[in-house]
Structure formats: C-alpha cells, structure tokens
Length: 282
Image 1 (cartoon, rainbow, N blue to C red):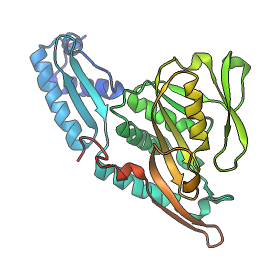
Image 2 (cartoon, rainbow, N blue to C red; image 1 turned 30 degrees about the vertical axis):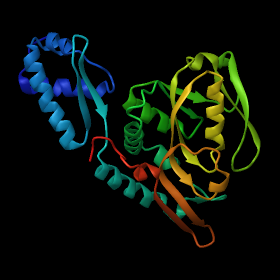
Image 3 (cartoon, rainbow, N blue to C red; image 1 turned 135 degrees about the vertical axis):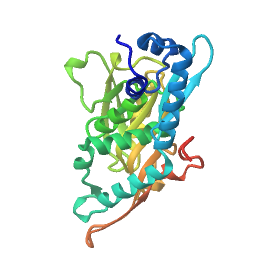
Image 4 (tube, rainbow, N blue to C red; image 1 turned 135 degrees about the horizontal axis):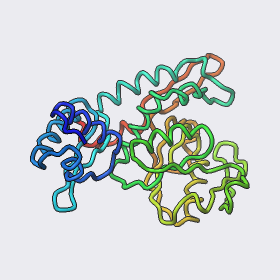
C-alpha cells in the first residue's frame, strides 16, 4: 500500500475502526498496512481515542500483550441519548399515531435508517459488556431494530418466524400465550439458525404484557442459549400486573392513551432509570 500522510492515515484508521466495532485489531495490522512503526500507530490511536470520547462516538479500548490490540466500543453519551429520545417521544406522542387497541403507528419510524441507527446504538450501549453472540427478534417490525443493533455490536441477526417455511429446513417450534390477547400462538426457528449455547440479545419494537418476548426466551431454551438481555423500543404500562418478563430495557414508556380525547402520554423508558445508564459516557 502507498504510504499515507499522517492526516490521511488517521482518517483511514478511523474508518476501519468504525466499520469493525467490538473487534480486536492488532497494532501490527495497522503498522504493516501503513508501513509505520507501532509507536507511531499508538500515537495515532491516542488521537482517535480522544476524538471519539469528545464527540461521543464511543470508547477505544487497548488490550496489552503480544495478542493485544485495540477495540472500538460504540457508545452514546447520556446527554445525546436524552436529546434524541425526547425528539422521538415527541414524534410518538402525535395523536395521529393512535391505532385501535391503544397501539401506536410506528412503521415510518422503523423505516427511517438514521433513526434506527440511533436506536441501535442505544441498545448496543446498554449491552456493550454482555459479550453478545447474536441479536434475535420476531418477524416483522422488530427486524430493522435487530439489524441496527447488530451493526453496532458486530454480530449476526436471527429472525424468529410465526410460521414454518420449507426453505428453513428443520425447525424448532413452540406454542406460547400472547400476554395481551391470551391467545395461543406459534413461533419457530430453524435448527441451523442458531448455534447452541449462544449468548442472545432479544429486541422488539413494542411490548404490552411481554408474551412475545417470553415466547422467544422459552424457544431459546431449546437451543441451550443464554439470554443476556431484552430491549424494547416502547413498552406500555397498561398490563404491568400481567407482565410476563421483568428483566428488560425500554427506551420509551407508553403511560396512558385516551382514544376518545386523542391524547398520548409517553415518557422516557427504563434505559434512563439505570443507576449507571451509559457506561463511560458521563
């Protein structure tokens, strides 16, 4: 590779780090790629590390030793997260979003790439230290959230289906009870879709009583997987007494819906109630 000026090298290294989050990159890789001494690469990384922390891009962690290197951990500052969620909550509180049953129309939000990127980074921040192997969701509206989150964690996505597809091959299916409607439903996952004993982060767009999340947790037992966390974009507090899961992180809480008066009361979720909400960003 043609030897770059330091300014160009810094840009190229930054792009490489941003494209490979949660990946340990040996210093020798950069040294050989740019034809530079490790000491020069270390100085460059110190500059990038400071810029990442000041701009709220994330953390740059150095691992010492012969097998060491540098790892980029995407994180969002608390103040940036609050600013983003307050704007999003304002959008969600629009009375025109009201649907029968107290649901909110969110397809436009779930289809906005920049919004999904911010939400994915928030979930990646919350579970940065959980050694996630895969992000799981159930079709269909949770899919954009899952891919956005997986991008910042640099892991694959697994999608649970509500019906069997011949193209999936052998599948594991379970029946579960919907927490809100109390109806028995079915979900399935291809046996090839998830390695046994994986560490799984579950994400979904909306949670009432948590029946769908409970179903995915039960399904993962068939794969001897470990659920490291559950993240939901919006939870409703209407069915708290019938909630089927307790351990989860929400970004927004739907407190009350007045369909007749067309009023929506929504506030920040449990993500912002955590004692150490966003590690390393305060």
